[in-house]
Length: 405
Image (cartoon, rainbow, N blue to C red; front, side):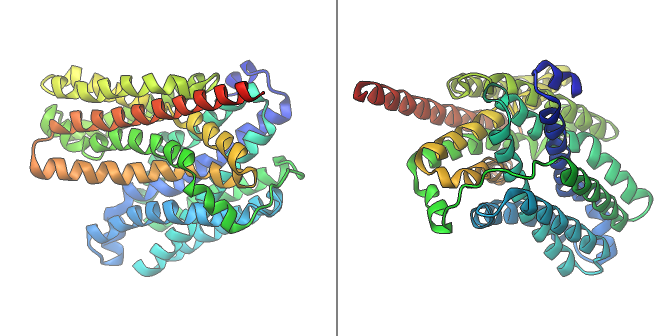
């Protein structure tokens, strides 16, 4: 990571800040996803069904998607330094409540609290990076911050799951609490004390969601992620039934998938470095081809695994570009809502996950696993079409402003 930052030519303060913000997203990601590996333990301990335990995952995503933009719009008027420290402290408290929970009701409540706070922290982290990092480095740094989520899946979640399996699931949340405390200490020491604040009313910021350009940009990552999750939601049966891979190897392949998805953040930084939205038009076409290729490669174990690993490389390729694009659009249409705009990409991703899982469910119910491939590819093509439309509108506005001047 440090070598990457050195190549970017950032000064020492900026590099340390980038590492701190990446650590923060790593901690948020670990707290969000670690419950997936502990659902069986939680369901047995709390005497609830596995399906009910599953709502600890979906409930988190729904709370994140709904609560993040609303709370971000409300708190973005406050100074960022004390706000970040307050939110990290609430995150720590939420994990402590999770660790102490003896009932499903208390655990789901703590998960909702943690979800909303996590969403706002991620939004503010992106906004801080956008304000402080050099213009030509913003794309790669934002991609690095997003990479914290990916790394949490590869490192944080397996460690947390192992802790829960060797001890108990409550111990895992003490682990995430410790990570939160480390993040708080680093934030106190590293975050700039004085950061600019764009003050705007809650109504003005939420009004950004009525802007057609913002909505158009919002659904670009939604459909891209939906394309991937149409397939990824059912990756275990695809591996076991479609590719004839023994169950004992599934976890190893999922770990490899997570490792390949880290490369996706590197690709994202390259795409965002210059005129990223124009590149995304074609990136999504490549994604559609990769997703659709599974239709033809599922008959071969090796070829099918290649399709899945390439799918991992493409999953987050649009994140940094869309994040910067939404913030830039907010700068043009509603400068006071830039922090709010920075919350929309993670929200769009969570909406895309839910949409993809739902679409995949319909496909599997009405047909065969192999049909997930072309349906996922179709979602990626929709994302490409939206990117084409956004880019065309940008060009038209540029030409109009040029003629006017």
